[in-house]
Amino acid sequence: MKTIRIGKIAYTNVLPIFTAFDETGLSIEWCPLVPAQLNRSMQQGTIDIAPVSAFAYGQHYDKYDLIPDISISSHGAVGSIFLFSSFDRLEDLDRQPIALTNTSATSIHLLKVILEKYVGVQPDYHVMTPDLHEMLKVSKAALLIGDDAILSAWHHPEIKRFDLGEEWLKYTRLGMTYAVWAVRKELLNEQPDDVSEVAKRFLQAKYFGVQNLEKAVQYALKLGGTTDFWKSYFHGLCYDFGKSEQDGLATYFQLVYELGYLSESVPIQTLEI
Ligand SMILES: C=C(O[C@@H]1C=C(C(=O)O)C=C[C@H]1O)C(=O)O
Image 1 (cartoon, rainbow, N blue to C red):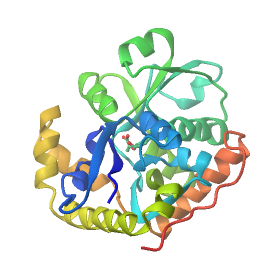
Image 2 (cartoon, rainbow, N blue to C red):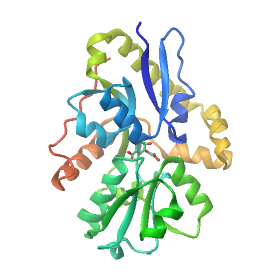
Image 3 (cartoon, rainbow, N blue to C red):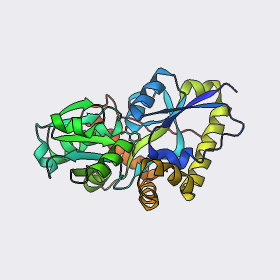
């Protein structure tokens, strides 16, 4: 078996899956990166399988297939995708500067959909490294994801923040999928049996990890917080990719396409394993 390079999101959100992954008998190399770097590495072919931003799948779906029934989704509040804002109302952000983290792809476009389609404002976006203090020096609101969002919320409870999973649910009554497990089609053609085995291990890891959160919580505590905080964070995330998650994602793809941020409407294709 040729070594398969697998990307890992360098955030706490995936710990229930990655801490439960059984690599016995597999030849794999782990590549921990933030989502925007994972998206790039998958596109360039320096990694073969990864949880990529759902938006990045939309950009390159012709090159990828998806492992079925695994994602990072939420039905409502996600707990780690926040727009921090100097204003109490999203309506006040029209023509205002908003800083977007350079680590994201899905959430950046989710924010654009919410603000432009539903709130009806047209802000001036600019991309920055994820540093809340620096971002708010030059803008009226700042989008952070993952551990950057969690830490900034802890350090700055006084700053108003909007949870994008909650906003999306409010306007659409749908869940939202932020990341999906993509496999490069080239790898699938070259090593179909190995891909199928890795996909099965991911699904086993998901089933076991979500039922047994102790190990994930133990790792998560290194960032800070309490056991109860992390249990409730993990319970707020959904790692499935069934009909209700796919319906939410299909609506997102349609709206992102209508707003011109994707050049075509995206089919969601999952693998038979
Ligand atoms: C829930 C999250 O989902 C993520 C958001 C992503 C994005 O915005 O592109 C990509 C992968 C996930 O890590 C999070 O990062 O907090």
